[in-house]
Image (cartoon, rainbow, N blue to C red; front, side):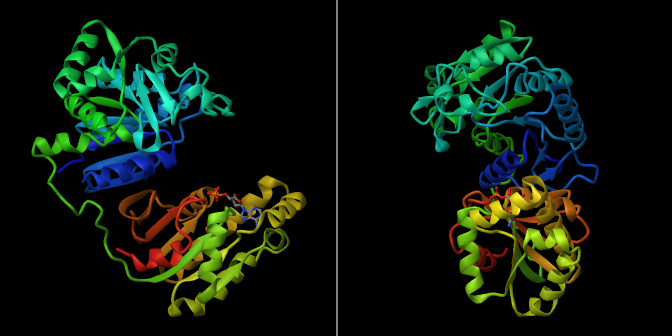
Length: 420
Ligand code: ADP
């Protein structure tokens, strides 16, 4: 069986979010870090995580097309372009130009644009995007440093980004069901419209829209609208009704936590785990003076691993972080910690660690990069937004990559108690 749904996400956490949604809806899903070069994994959906949200338009198009080419080669029947539920973009792009380039490459002429994510209070009404009770351009997004959103009308916003015409399918049509929505798509397509912004106020609307997109080559939107797509494959008999889309291989080995996030949530999680597990703190000032600090940490861990999970962290309270940053510079302090965490991760894996939690977005990126991991199979959720994953490749690992603020106070011990 080849992959059914091929997704291109314009950033890493957006890709994780989408992959989690697809798994919950019953698709076995792998998240690839960058455009893959290796073999096609045995799954129902692949999400390729790019970093194309704010790169120059040309680069975003080139990367997205190369992701599309790989997904087509993998046999995908439908393609999904995932962007942020606040439609993060500028008048230059990148959502519109990438969407149009994908349509052109597929030889198609029509798609939808639906960033709605009602569970996170992102709804679209008459083409206007709301964040909670206010319009997008009053939500704080108007002050975003890279993609200030000063117009909440997505038809206008997308129209400024695209060559083709942009239309609207409003909620009154969506509420009349999938057939009425499909007819509206056909009418717009017939008029030469290239993208239809589609209203959605709740999850039921998203499911209707998903159903109406069954025959569309390319769907674009937030992770919300992807919710309705798996059912189309099930209806066609291509996807089994399964409760086990999140099943991972159980992998034996030692367990460890690496924490580089200095968020309040992570510091509390560290305090709780340190009570009854070995814990070692790494100081960026020491890293700057002594090249062997990471090697010393690995030596510290080696004899302890057989007794259970241990913790190595650089996380510190704001005063300590400021002091390190004042001495080393913000970037150097961060980079020293990230490099050390990557080196320690490699050392721990060489010692037999196969279950690893990493706390911190940037820290996770450094560790995954340092270990040369190319893809992650998405497993069961430990806490909202943080699943266990299984790395692809010769030495599979169970990995939980946690954004700093995520997870309950007992997250680390809880996660090891819920291993696949
Ligand atoms: P979060 O998900 O909480 O934002 P990140 O890993 O993305 O966490 O970011 C935390 C950053 O802080 C990383 O670049 C990390 O290297 C850096 N860092 C960690 N510990 C310290 C410290 N003690 N002093 C200065 N910077 C640190």
